[in-house]
Every structure is written in structure tokens, then in C-alpha cells.
Length: 375
Length: 201
Image (cartoon, rainbow over all chains, first blue to last red; front, side):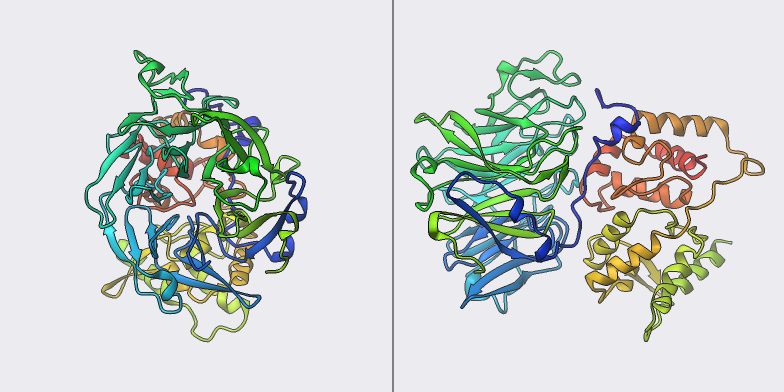
């Protein structure tokens, strides 16, 4: 609670902002207000799906959507110019995390992971998900998950720190990987506060993950992090050291930031960098090849909103960060959100999907004349 | 006394008309339990008066989706009473009900005498509010706003139960904020917080 102001009007501006539980009507979506670099277009891909969070695209083009507040995993199927929205699993608890691997859909709820095999063949009558992993804490704080299958064929599952800033147990504050049958859990990154997005660099195969910095320390720091795992079991500092160079006023005593792996980039105070993907498509201009798209959901613990956009992160040959540029902006209007990007995902044609949990919508970004309105 | 109260609770929870047509008929069971004047007289049933509409909408949504628990004993069975009550509600129903309930007046502030509060517990509760910065989200007068509920003059038993459930990761909020805030708070402190907030002036 250090640094947190007493209750007053100023403090009220620093309180969490809730996304509406019900999706916005299609004619109220902010696409016309969004700004992208020259030559890019953005359109609504799907709307009317409550609290759209993690995105995955199947081999046959089905788009799968996870959610933090509802109980369903949704599939979007586009066929003959029509959009069908199907429920592939329901009665779940915080099914935020999704992964796809060899036709199998993996679903991460708050404290368990399950799967549905050959998901795109059973969209109309999917079987109940089969639970494969339950060795997870049940904490609500930072309990929702982002998951992905790595190039090693293992499923990566994060366990957030169970609170804003707490000296957590060794079972928290980490990314672990498990075999696809739920066996062989191994911690591969420690000192992780809350990552809600990661992907592997297609060049060096290293894992890059976003991590959200603590709140209630100050408006401008610490910043959120982009990290890279270069060896199994690395410690990234939380809750002792933030942003690679700032010791925590409560837990940093007697520690040094040199004990921990620093981030490879700082991505802004309270900016909530969540979903990220390396761009491996061919539709966008060459400079975006192997760049990272990062969705920043935007700040709450800050008087002037920060983030609420998608940025492009360009890397050097050695995998370090060269520069960060805005990619989609316009989600903040008069210091209020009109949308909040959560995850990004590539389609087979190289276009980029962006989920917006504030409006319950998914947008599609294309380049050049590739725009296919209304599809 | 407790037996009578449970019986009333049981009746009010069962009273959903099967063939309700008008809005007045549909909202009657809500008011029967939660109180038509904005305050509840039933143990562990929250007062809804003065709650912000966005907060009510979120709760109704979570109940409909079976994401927030509302376990009650009916006959020999435990049921998710609010999930049952909101079954079949459309998105528009959720909006209509939350807008209507948001217009109920806030629960009245309890008079000082004859219910003179214990000074020590009131002081302890006030100190805990400051320590945990409850009033930076719930407002200085604990009246709530937007997605944050009014807590002032809420039922003490409901407050204590809810605070315990948040701490123990049983009450599922919209996000993990309340679980995070309450993680270090003891049972005794929760009792004092509920005591103070229920008597807030």
C-alpha cells in the first residue's frame, strides 16, 4: 500500500475501470476512430461476443475466443459471406486462456487446463473438455491465464502473483511448462508478476513474455516489462525488483536488481501490456517481418490514461529491442476508454486480429487493397 | 428467532411467479427478499438501495452466467438461488432490472441512540478503512460508483460474509482486486470492518 493515496477525489481517478459485461452493439464500435500507419485498414471481424479476450486461429480458419467473465469458449466461423458464432465449451470458470496445437484446443480456466481434440471437426457437437491438469492455485488475483504451446511441443502455463505486491509462494509468480498430457511440470521463469501474453521468436526460438508491473507505487513507475527467457529457471525480479532497476520499497531491502534478469524493454507505466505475437505473415510491409505486436489494454492506476493501443516492437538481430512504434491508437477519448485491446493473433493470410474486451468485439487489420469489408 | 428469519428467507426466495408477465410481477421476488424500500430485513441478503446500475448489471450478469455463487438451502437442497432467478434473462432483461433496482433509495443511516455503537470497534473499523484504502474506490462516504458497490449501511452480516468470501477466493468478483486487498485481513478485522461500515454515518 506504500504510495497509495488516502481516499479523496484524486485517488478516485486511480481506481479500477470495469469493462461492461454485455457486448456493445455493432453500430457503437470505435473502428472509425482508430488510427493506423498509412496503408493499413481496420474493420470489425466479429461483435456481440461478451468480454472477448484470448484469440486463437485454427488450421481451417476458425477463430476461437476465450473470456474472463463469462463461462464459454466461442468459435467464429466465416462461410459463404456469413458469420456463425458457436459455443464450443460452457459452464467453465474464467476460461481466459486458449492454445491450439495439432488440431487440439487447450482451455485454461482459473485453476485447471482441459482439451478438446480435433476441435474444428466437432464445432457443431463438441464433446465436454477433458481435464488434463489441475495442479494450480485457486487465487482470484491474477488467476486468469494466457497459455500457448511452444516450439518444444509443451504447454506453457503462467501462475500469477496472488496480489498487487506480495511475497508469494514458490508455486506462484512463474511460467511453467507441462507435457500435453499434463505431466512433467517444470518452472521455466520465476519472479513473474502477471503475464497475460507470450510467444516465441521465430528466429532464435526464445520465449518473449509481457509482464505487468505493480500498482500503487506511483503514477509513472514502475513500467511494464517485455522479457525474454534465455535459460530455464531465470528469475525476473518480482516482487523484489521492478523494471530491472527499481527495488521494491517493501521487499527490496537487502536485495539487488543485479540478482535478476532485467527486461529487454519497458512498455510504459500501468500500460497493461497483455497479448503479444511475432508477425510471421507476408501481407504487411517487410519491416514488420518478425516484429512483435503487443496489445496494451491501458492503465487504470493512473490519472491520465496510458496505453490502450497496439504497438509494434522491432528487434535487433541479436533479439534485443531496437524500437517501439504505435500501431493502432485511438482507443482513448477525453481520457476515457472507448475500447481496450487484449490480444492479437495472425490469420493465415497475414492479417492481424485484435480482441477488445471493453466492447466484446474483434477487429481485423489488413494492409493495402486486401480489405474485404463485411466478411 | 433465527428459525423464523430462515423461514422468511425461504419463502421470499421461492416466490418467483412461474407465469409473470408484467415487469412489476417479475421484479416482485427481488423486492420480497432485498426489500422494496432499498434495505433488506433478511439475514445475509444484501440491501440493494443506492447501488450504481453498472455494478448491479455486472452482478446480474455474473449470476446468470453462474460465475457468482449464491448458495441457499431450499428444502434439503443447496441451490444457486440467484442463478435460478436470472435463468433465461436476456441481455435487455439484465439492463432493465439493474436500471430499476438502481433507483431504490439508499438504506437509511442507523440512528446513534438507541443503537449506540461500541466506540472501540468503530475506531478500529475506521482505521482499517484508511489502512486498506477502501475509500479510494468506494468513495469517501462509501457510496460507491460505477462498477464499485455502495457499502455504507449495508447489512453487517452480509458485509462480513462477503469480505471473508473475497479473502478466501470464494466470492468471485469481476476481477481479483478485492481478493488482493483482503488477502492480509484477519477474521477479527473483518468483523470490525463490517461493524463500522454497517453503522457508517
